Length: 187
Figure (cartoon, rainbow, N blue to C red):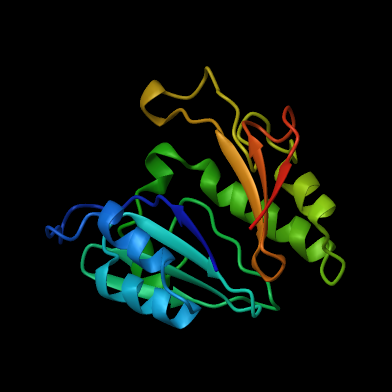
């Protein structure tokens, strides 16, 4: 099973002290099934998070969370992509992504379009090319440092990875995938 954790921004209106992500994420990762991992996340994941889970059996699911709620997201036509803003309708009102990571919306749309163009014919190599896409540089799917972006919200991609749970493979690019090759690891 593979898990990807992603940050989203939500106001602290309903803030509650919860279990830290460093405590429940490792527990979720130790689970044998995607259902068990999802159960851990549904019980504990609250706050600024999105989690993407995939199993060797081909199951894919996402979970968005705010401080007092969560929502499970399922793939559309076997594709599930996410960036740094909420897609759950009831969470959109409090979403703060527009303030500091407004490019999240364009990155998600671009990723969806590129995935749809390759629908039914996706390969690891094509995924690598999609993740290295330079459209809207420097705020492309993967981010480069942008001197025009306020320092507080400036970010750049440190790692890009592609997981193939059914093959027990992960391909990792340390840094921007346009400048660094993906290295294959097998479990």
